[in-house]
Length: 208
Image 1 (cartoon, rainbow, N blue to C red):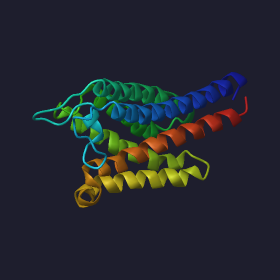
Image 2: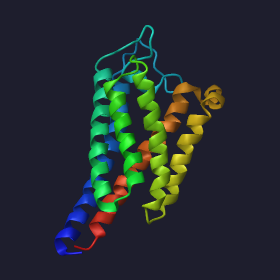
Image 3: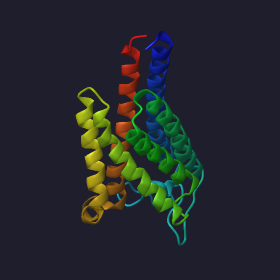
Image 4: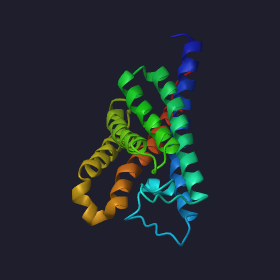
């Protein structure tokens, strides 16, 4: 491999890491910010309220509050776009089609969640499910890519997400609907931030 190709590969790896890390931070802080602006005269709790209720609650009688809705939906749209760009650079470096498809679906799902808030059916539930499944599977599959102890945590985070997703009916009486959804979503966010950090670190150690 010539020096130009090596430099290009290193930049792709670093860019993918930056974008994934940034995407994870944006969605996490976007949710926190939207929650902080949610009106006190409406009931919103971690255990009972879905994360997407920040954008719009489910029909009928959907509730949309501002600026929470705009903050949440914009954060999801921006996250989705960033993850899709990160997927491009990830594929350029690893040339792994399965990883590209899984992470790409994560980005597409997040984008769809932002474009189609909770009051839009059936688009919103489909995009949310795509986000949850592809995100958890991405974390598990990244075991093949990661060459550090973080790969074990990645698998664990992915498994946690899938267990809570497919055991929701059993776990809702314990955690509440909102609590269960957060145990599905937040492991994906934590993996995205950790994976981005890993790629940035790897990119900085790659030889020019």
